[in-house]
Amino acid sequence: MTSAVPQPRTEAAPSGEPAGRRGARRSLALALLLGAVGAAVSLLATRQTWARGSVAVAGGDFPLTATGSDVTGVPAALAVVGLAALVAVFAVRRAGRYLVSGLLALSGAGTVAAALLGVGDSAALDEKAAETSGDTAAAVTGLTHTGWPYAAVAGGALLLAAGLLALWFGRRWPAMSGRYERDGSPRARKAAPPVDPDRPEDLWKALDRGEDPTRES
Image (cartoon, rainbow, N blue to C red):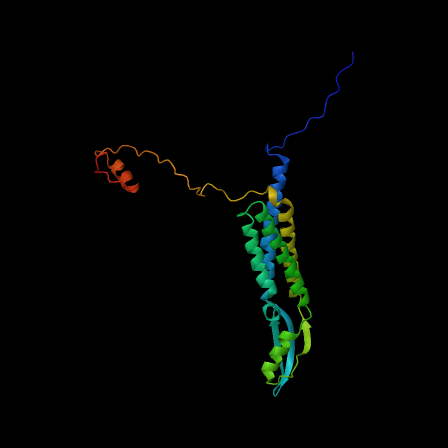
């Protein structure tokens, strides 16, 4: 007599939650983290010094600095757009979600490109050199750059990653609840409980509901 071979059993998750839903929650949490950190890093980087130099004036060399926003305003603007798109992902569904996710990814890619173009840019300091010296032909000397442009690149890459996650997994993410959305149909109103004039608490509850407790029902 042959004994039955035991079949492998599929173990349920300890929480009882389907694997697909767990994966969607994880991708959602990761996209939120990447998007929020990416936007914050990009905005922070644009407020820092990207380049330093000097210009010759009557009293000697005058030091000059240029922040990321002086060099280019694109990364900061796209970081704000990306952050707004990250929030808007949960307010739209179906095709709208794909469009917003694509906007989030493009914001990240644009931030990366703009920051890379600003790494060796000297136009902002040349303009400051001309203003400081009063000579329109003056140019900055001793030009050096900091690492903050690369921080903006990293922030843009995080935004791009968040957008790609939204494009790939966004269809499984929850959307804003529609319980507060009005469909135009009349809603049944619950009948108000009777008011006992001898009970002060009933009178106060009626007043809170906007009713006249002295009116005969």
